[in-house]
Amino acid sequence: MFKDKKGHSLLEVVLSTIIFSLIMLTITALLNIGLKSWQIGETSIDVQNAAEVTLHRLTGELKLTSLGSCVIEPDYIVFDSAIDDYGKFKIDSITRTPLWQNYILYYKYKADPNDDYSILYRKKLSHDVSSVANRATVDSNDLKPDTNSRIVAKSVERFEVTRQGDLLNIRLICSRKIGERKLPYNQDFDADKIKASIDILTSVFPRNN
Image (cartoon, rainbow, N blue to C red; front, side, top):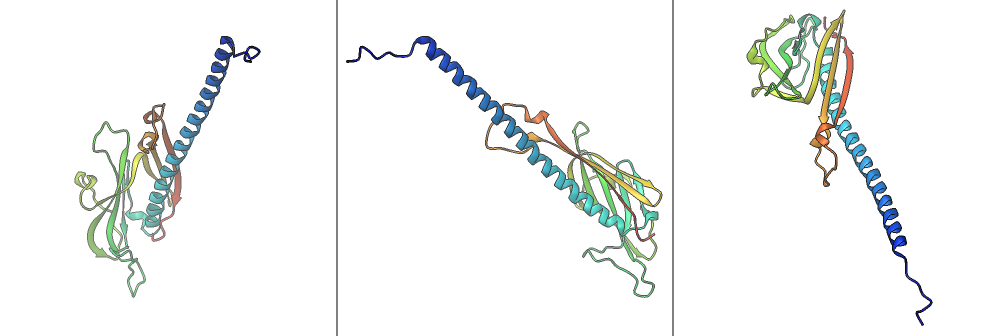
């Protein structure tokens, strides 16, 4: 009863296997590209959010400072601030002018000179309350992390503040290797060689000149 039924030939089996393998390789490649793109996108969003939060805080403080008090160097900017420890802007009740409370220092720091990126810190430098904004004197110890330093941005490639007339131009470039984002699967590409970067340039006009 089975004499009229025929099986697949060896050639048909081989061709079917090859076609199936090619289809699976194509699906795997497309899936890999999709996962890589998703990982780069997620890392880019993380980097952008961190950079924007940092610049939002810095520009907010610079708007309330005096341009004459700003000391701008390649690795840091320091300026006088009328904001007290409770986040309140202090003014003289009679003259309605700012009462300057302390200096605010933003600086880059590398724990290891061989590191790819710097860390951006924020630090308060105390001084007596004054009705006149002054320029701070910063020494090498002020540019090292301590208990008064707070991290505001990691993976900083470039932090630069320049003056143009009455404007302060701020440029911040942050990057992160996509391998830093831990995923529940193994990549078949070197995630530590691919990075996401964000380059933000903004300007601010100090109001209390």
